[in-house]
Length: 289
Ligand code: ADP
Image (cartoon, rainbow, N blue to C red; front, top):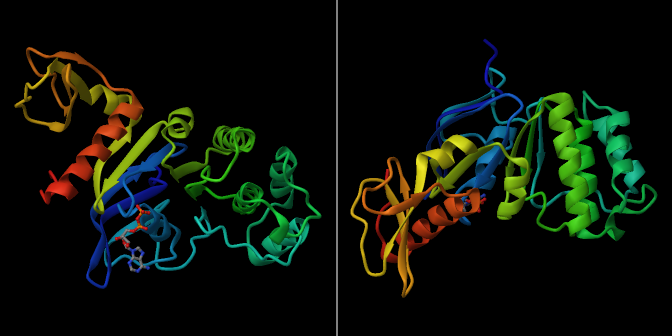
């Protein structure tokens, strides 16, 4: 059997006294597109940097296609960081040449092909004159020019207008369909995740809360609706919200008896976990393990 494209075993990352990640274990299946979600500070960017090899774990191990990642950029991995560091004084074309010079494995054809699909990017423009959205798209072309087997994207859609977002999502979907690239992308935009992801990795306070195929995860959860003021006393209640008319709870595991239940959609599921996280922080209650 082939080694998993990305495997994390009991990974922890501490920055001084801050525990950014703790006891993180998961695997990403080959060719999957996984949405990485969680509240701010959950550890998403740290996890992406660890998988790319830009940071070393404090404990545990990450392997990419069976090879341990040891604190240097793994050749099979491309990472689009939130800062999108690009050489401002270069033109887009010069930047692609730099990509060729700096990467052992590089496909000028692939980088060009991606740029050609992006309506908003002028190859002769200086990088510093590009809009935030165009910068992101150029950074994606650079990432894909490395012909990665694993593509890590930190908030790739955050500064794209709807047209650029659509172009970019299509490029990513084609990449996965044609090259079988495994993708892990963090986003706060839940509709983007629903459009492209088949897997979900939900972090909170540095720990994996949920990981797996989205359809299976949704099936494993229920939204239970009951009369206003009623409290759902059941195992696996993640979050409860109340209006003057009804109580709604997100539940992991079997459907609670006596309540009207359906399965959540992705947005309801993620929102339930995010709300639960905020409630825990406000009330000082420690996380449910
Ligand atoms: P997210 O991407 O989910 O918002 P991060 O991975 O950026 O979360 O951060 C996780 C935690 O680690 C936060 O508490 C953050 O302040 C801390 N952290 C991240 N990077 C550093 C760093 N270089 N030095 C110190 N603390 C850091």
